Length: 81
Image (cartoon, rainbow, N blue to C red; front, side, top):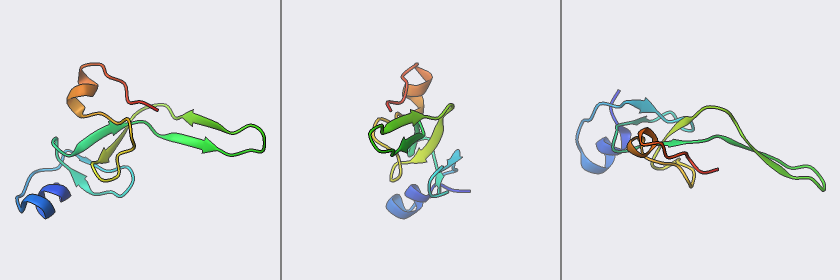
């Protein structure tokens, strides 16, 4: 699988290292982001957000705010919720 962003933006073929958790597009190291999945629970009087365990990989288009690059994740930065 090749990186979708590289193919459409840069017109080059780059091997994908991950597929997006949201849309399934391939992403290379330059276009993959590490993030957390958050569940928004809407209940009357007691809304809450829960971060699911583990990490999710996203492409740059679908990445939630607070997601980090793989290099930042390897250096110990945690994705923000």
